[in-house]
Image 1 (cartoon, helix red, strand yellow):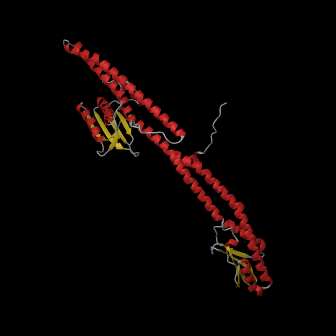
Image 2 (cartoon, rainbow, N blue to C red):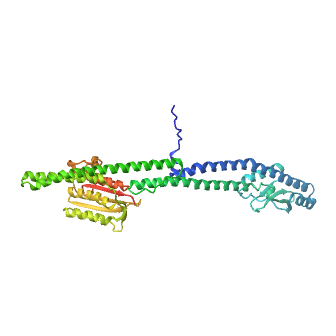
Image 3 (cartoon, rainbow, N blue to C red):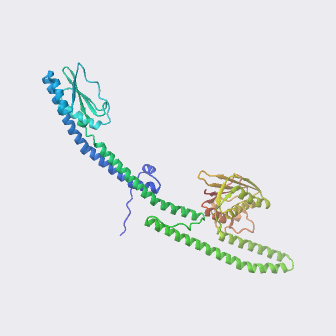
Length: 446
């Protein structure tokens, strides 16, 4: 019986605001439920407890104020005794402001939900118009009631109207959320660091770097992924070593009879047939060198900070000696960690390929916003149809119809160049050149 995974639909607008990193998503998965739980608990406390306690306190205060107002209305001269009793027994300060009306409106308060409880209690207990202010005095509530001779002003302690300790609960809830978030960040960061190290090792290996010091650590699943990466790396290295050894052996075995044939031809009487055979042998030797270069790749070479302008200048010099017109545009201060011999071989293949099919070759180097570089090789030759750009990178593929390659070509130049670029973590793409021919763009990371 197959178990289908539950897919949760998330709107695209929401996905746009979600974090993209594993650290951010893990933190969101842990912190968001905790924060929601804390808010729900706080809201339940506020609604079920704080509001209830406040309503009861407000009812009690309103009852005391109603008693004071009724006592005064029944016997106005007894106000001093009423005020003294209210001060002693109820902590209320009562004064009469003669010929004074109530203020026009009530000031805005941050405790509007609590003010509503006091307003309701006063409305239920008092028949006379009233007004109150919970903002002016931090520790007191100013309540005024309209009476016959003016306004009766009552100053009451705030704790008699509100449950003033509720903020302590909110503070502890916020502190608990902060503590849990800090712990989650520390633990998640430790787990994510193991994945980041694995990603760095994979990227370094993809660029041909040394990752022998990489050791698996972290959660069990992360260690399994790291061990699988190490096993994959060893298989790839073993495959490359076997391929290189095989091609080197084949090259060595073929060179021996080639050397004997060259010696026989050197001792033979000169003739057109002998010269043709010498040409065939030279082509075979060139093909063997190409096969070996393709198989050898970048083996044994380490990354070195290299001035790209100097390296391209050496490549251009070789093309100029071959009769090409080459222009180079590069920043002399642009230095990049590369395998110089491998990159030189790749650029030489591109430049010589351009020189063999065009009269003018332009090489330019520019930095990219991501911190890498972009090397562009343009020529004014016949170019390649866009539909065959990828085909041109296939090993041993010769696009004779498009580029009129010379007889010595074996179809490995672009393949070797792309292999070197990808070995550095970059790539090579082809496009139409502004000069009218082919443009090869080498992109390398920083």
